[in-house]
Length: 288
Ligand code: NDP
Image (tube, rainbow, N blue to C red; front, side):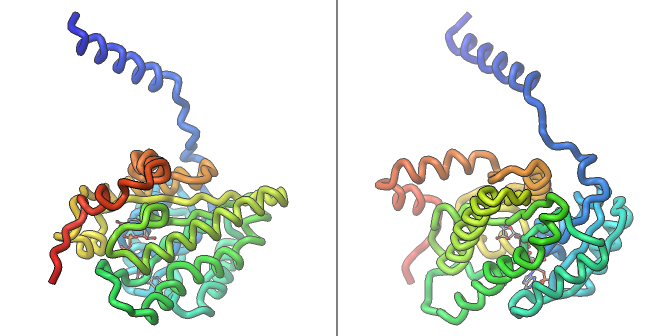
């Protein structure tokens, strides 16, 4: 047998052994009747998460700004098997909304097992043009509202040994061009929620914190934002949604989707000197 054939045989054997011994810790039945508050649920990855949770038989509260769209997502969730479902329209740029949303969810579901923080404000994929006010606004929507929602939900999550699931991005680990303000909000999430996880463990408070690091996903807004600017293939939103849900259900500290983002983040830390050349080869920019 040729050497390449031997290598292939060994690789297939190893893959077979991994497949045989690997026990997927995710138990879909654990989500039947689970009480979930899901933000950014009217579109993109959040909408796909709503459908997955519904198929698993969860009890769900959906939130986003557009009431008519939430209503449609809710109706589809009912046909897919959601045990209970409600929605509450809310704009997370308003500092008073997060607490109201958590109160509504706790009242409708009688408590919470999962808080899934997923919404984002309108994202500009462009060079920094000095708009400080926009950055302040985006911080409110993408970061401060997450902190407020988590703070309001912690007591009920603790009572129910629940989980906080925070959707972040590769740009919250690796700063890329055209994402100054967005990347800042995602780095803030990593800092806050990783520190919070440490504190909860130190205090033996049984609430898990799962940070979800996503690459480019094929949602309408992401594809529109990056068209002609990025040489990357987008991964499917339904797959990202399932990976997030599984991460939360298995109480993982971090998940990466697609999986190869994890080695990318490690290489980023290990090889600081060639970062600019590597990164810029994935972006299209011609000076005006
Ligand atoms: P979308 O733009 O498709 O959806 C955003 C959701 O947030 C919508 O439901 C929208 O609903 C809601 N939303 C927008 N503004 C507000 C607001 N002011 N208050 C409350 N809700 C609001 O986003 P994606 O599905 O693409 O992204 C979901 C998550 O995944 C985000 O955290 C994002 O950072 C992360 N991610 C996505 C990537 C991608 O390539 N798609 C890559 C990496 C991370 P409505 O308009 O009705 O309010």
